[in-house]
Image (cartoon, rainbow, N blue to C red; front, side, top):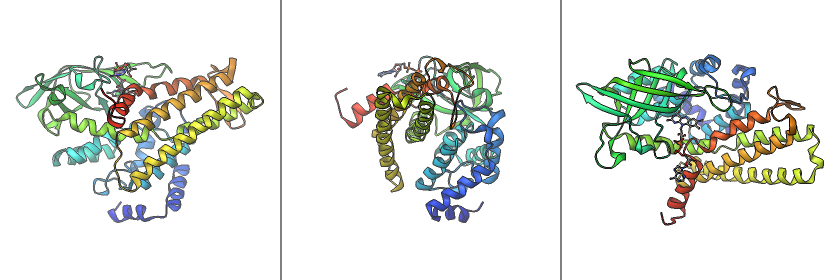
Length: 387
Ligand SMILES: Cc1cc2nc3c(=O)[nH]c(=O)nc-3n(C[C@H](O)[C@H](O)[C@H](O)COP(=O)(O)OP(=O)(O)OC[C@H]3O[C@@H](n4cnc5c(N)ncnc54)[C@H](O)[C@@H]3O)c2cc1C
């Protein structure tokens, strides 16, 4: 697709663009994969990755010169909104949302030429090796070591909570290359094929009984120095920049709005709208969602004007994820003794699975920086409270 074609997307009328994306998605996204309550594996969602790739719509935020759609912030938000509303599942997208943008900004020409086309083609599927058993919120404490030996680093250590590592063939990871001085200044960003000798991936089963993440062990793994992005001991700054981008997307109110619609169907089915206590709690939640939507729109407007979003976006992540949890808990209560039925409860608007909803909403207050840590950010960087 040419750069001109991409500029035409941005020049399109918003509604026309929305209709075009919606129509193509309805035509091409498999009906049976809509609104899946778990992260799908490659064998379920891989074809969709490749369909998007063929269409040239896999990487809406990448610049056109690197094979992306080159959408501006406004069109990108419309694109995401259409996908979320239709219940399009996430592909294994670490290459699209993290490695690709990072290489575009910080990679060498050779790295861009090698990795970007392979991400677009679905040849390289990535996982993120940041967290360790002793380094999650305090990520800078990570201990996985990389010791220089000729043209390689020899890597030893243990990563954990690595989402969909079992589907990936590449990992991007943070390693310690210097134990002296400030811990943030001894961290390096590395890329490695997962079939490198010495790497072992062990799946972890989550609360919903899905193997969505894994542990990854490194045992004398040789990774070429050429696989460093951004220079030795410079990994922290670039990794941190990526985490900031996540928060506006985690803040999208769409999931809460859709979950509210399911709560409404369920409450109608079980006759709870005659119960004043339920109605009061339901109304409170609706008002929480209205607040969430208003806050989200405010951040979106900043992006649309080409501005940058500051630490106050942590507020959005907190409010969204906690509203979702309150909502799913009310859904569970509303379902009463049927809340745990795995096949779901039939309503006029389809099946509702309260237990799956509760379980599905739990991790959101942990990933992308836990909500306690987001509160610390607000306290320090926004409210300027003493540390
Ligand atoms: C679904 C899911 C997918 C994930 N995918 C990945 C992935 O692909 N790659 C990856 O590298 N990681 C991934 N993670 C890991 C995630 O980044 C960490 O779980 C997160 O950073 C929290 O770290 P932790 O689990 O070690 O908890 P800890 O940091 O040990 O925190 C434990 C508790 O203490 C609280 N706490 C910690 N520090 C403070 C503080 N200073 N002040 C107040 N409270 C504090 C936390 O909020 C939390 O409640 C994933 C996690 C989840 C849940």
